[in-house]
Length: 180
Image (cartoon, rainbow, N blue to C red; front, side):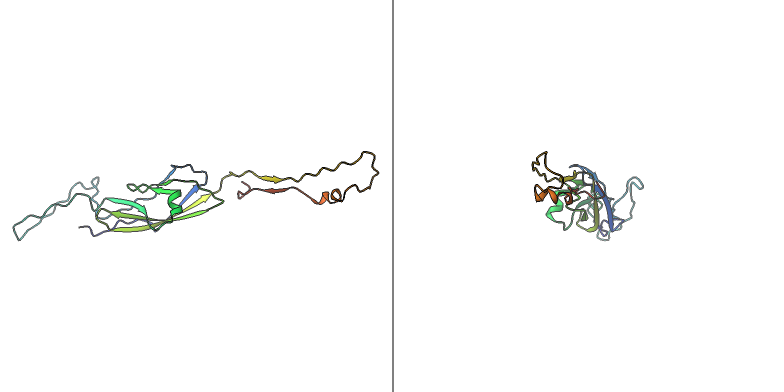
């Protein structure tokens, strides 16, 4: 009888993935376990005594169908599906597209585990993207060219822009956090 849905041990699973993770990088989530599953390493067979009053014998069901668990995303955006995919047989989450900390710092995924006869349960996987040093600092330099004759007297203003030059300083910008 398929009377148990697959269950995750944790309602929330946290993963950290660097934004430099390459396409195809895999991240394992815990397995969902189905109480209907027979663990053959612990117990290879179950002996039952069945008494049929009608003289017939019941048909045998497919072995393990109640314990066969498949994984899928449950209610996630198309953007998430472009960045990640999930192995339906083992639940491994794989990077499928570009990850950029400066664009998205956290992904919340809803993962569905379903057994062979359709009972299912869900867990939440929260992926924190970590920043790496992938943006070089940019310096905006404004240049000024104004010829000044070499025989000019000290204190002579040749151009009002030069007078204000000492107030200007270059600007620096780096999009990465923490000085990356």
